[in-house]
Image 1 (cartoon, rainbow, N blue to C red):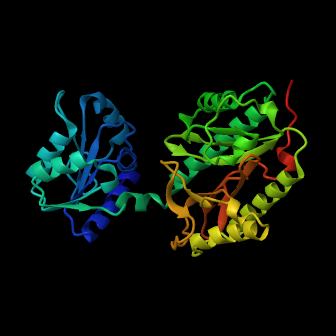
Image 2: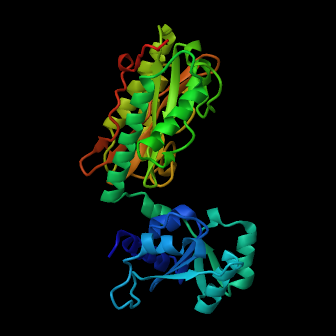
Image 3: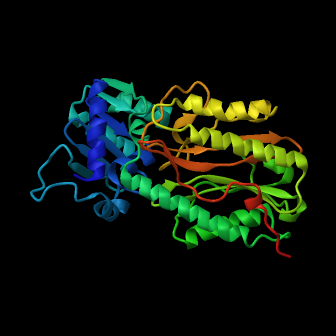
Length: 378
């Protein structure tokens, strides 16, 4: 059985527990997770006996390449079997989906409420023949929280790729480069070195702009301030890494040094406490307490981290009031930050795998302030 067939079998257990006959998957990331298909404009119906993949002629060959090996030599239907229906040109995907659901005779199906528009829900209600449309509770996302060995290896390589890119870019920094120049070079190198692109538009923020946690890279020159924040990641085979470093390019103010050492101590304390069974809210509190004791608590204004995988933000979320315990196979970011408007900010972010014994830091770039001081080229 392929890993995709195994995932669909695990999903069936959740469908049965919800009292539904099937689940309709419309989120492209979830379709990919359950089938291996990397295209779009496709839905997946998973019932208690099999699966029906709905797509169009543009993807017929791609589906055969990416999704099959899913049936036995006789082509017989088994619980892991994935049937494919290619809609005709001019047919609309939701119309074909409603036709297939109507012929299935399902009484109830789960739907992904976060990914269906009001109009799509109306179409299903009026034309699918299904009596009960049950809004799901993140059934596929719950499976994605725990990564299998291949996912972990892919994430490990995505982190390594991101680190190679950063190391190269950092060695080429000049005073005349802008934030946008650096961001574009990160994206170029990710692709050159084998990635499909960045995990998200890189954040390169110089000086006071580093106080914006989600700053957009602009025309500010690297040489205009003694430090810059770089938040970036690489996408490899669909999986996304996420890292942040602050680079010092000249003599730094004493205030900046205090902020940096506080953020680093908070991150180190949080990572040291990460192991199976510890609540994610406890990890957030450990980091937050370090920053609070330094008198900077009001300047840490976001959660400590989040899961990564096929999406850049996945469960679990490391934050207040999050009572889920850490489990082996989770891969999360740990990214405390302190931000002073008009002055700047520090965020240090690494990717961490929860193991049976504790945790493993997947990223290896040095975090100490001295190791992140560079001499700008002329």
